[in-house]
Length: 575
Image (cartoon, rainbow, N blue to C red; front, side, top):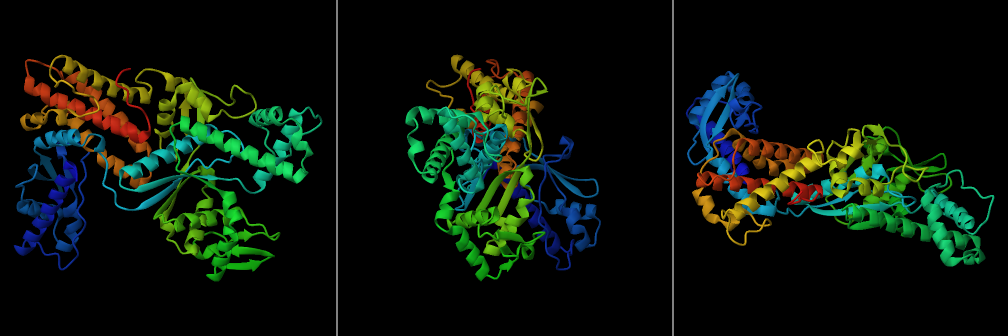
């Protein structure tokens, strides 16, 4: 448990003890009512203390007293002994404000130094979660929108891992169905064209991308016209299999370049081959949730909150996308996952209720299935929309974005806004080395910290052999004993922000809001730059103050590095 968690728990425990003491003294009578859950919040205004609670307002009705009276009673019985609480005050209609001894700030900095790369991490709790993202069709290159899907999913997975979940990162490969048939037909045309045949055209629902032209040109150069000698069905199967394999390899290559490393690439075709779709339909029917109408098999999804029943098997005997998706998610549950999280484009929002209904019908708790929906990405260059890539005729690819701005900038920009809002991604701004560029602003803060520590080492203020991958406090344990307190406002503001990091990671994981980490990193960078401009870190005339501030600087380094690590962004020591 962190210093912050311990001190908050101590305050809450003492509040419950105060309530118990007040009841025993006959000063409060709740009439047997259940005690409310007491929570602490950080006040918006510094003048209202470090933490505050509305416990008295929650107790007032049961106690049949004004909230302020209840608050004053609780404060009288509140025991500060052994806590960091310096004083307690009642404010407004009955809020209780807690003012902490500045020594708690030093304790936080000491803790950050002790934990290092583990600061913000929670212990494993034994629960397993499957996060599915970048489930792009293997029929073309990853485009700009896939980049947002990839980073949102990746950072969510990282946040969950940091908060104790055992995470499996998964890609669902849509390598079955009509789209694959159309893909194969498109490859057939491109292959023949590569051999010089004329008068051929891509099917109406086929794939027109230039990437398929290049793919079949390579194949034709290697195989010649040998494939034309094969029976049509065998040739089409070969081209389709070859094309899917090559496109999936391309997806994996680009994701690797983007720092996205998935554990599982699950094949939809494998479900068809194992008869998993129809097996699931039969199970749903045995449960009484499937009926026949109009020659098709329907899932009675309205019984589980959907707005209408859904077709599982069409009149022609072919299963629908819903049947395939339910069989896939059944497979996930049967692999032992406690929780499933999918990252989808916002245009799939209407699909969520039917999936939840299907999961409930299969016998699992629909609340264990969550979907994160992300909005569109508007690609800009100096504020002007970018619609086409260098190779005319298609959307800009994700790889082009990575090559243009770099992996770090691309990842940070994709995740710095809430997924449920449209993202304006300005390529030129993402390349700027100025505080206008959020990722540069954060990375520069880390580099400046490293520079300060190097200066301290050169000045003989750090021990020989000190390395930036180790914390100052670990190297100099005596500092923790000799440390004073942070008295400057910019110092205390910065430490309080650093102390909030574990809570921010937890909130990002609980709410599936990865942008919180990017925003937090920007806030820390801003607070650090303010501190640096207001306070002289290295001052030989004040050795104790220098030691204390070097501890703080190193705590900033640790926290910013850990935040960037969650985002999958590097933390440079020089810029």
